[in-house]
Length: 106
Image 1 (cartoon, rainbow, N blue to C red):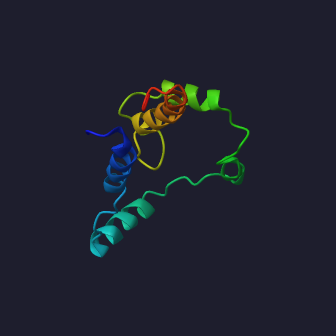
Image 2 (image 1 turned 90 degrees about the vertical axis):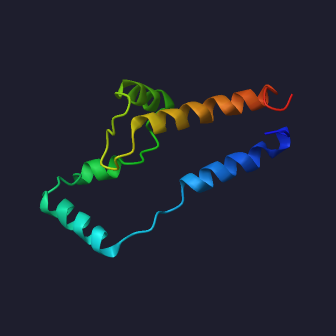
């Protein structure tokens, strides 16, 4: 990167590439969904479902939960490693402070 002003475009391109939906094979998708259904997965109780996204969960609680999760492990049903959540959480907190302090563009 040669121009600091191009950083937003570089970041946008990076995340756009990561977030592209891969091609899906309908047969493979059906096979995976059938396998998941056959496992008799435990669904969330109505109380648990109501608590999902509860705004009363503090930033400190999120940080403590992420920090307590083993690196490379996916703690939830989504299969997303905790490292990604931790990085996103940390980056969102520190980049705003760095930007405000003028560390990115002087």
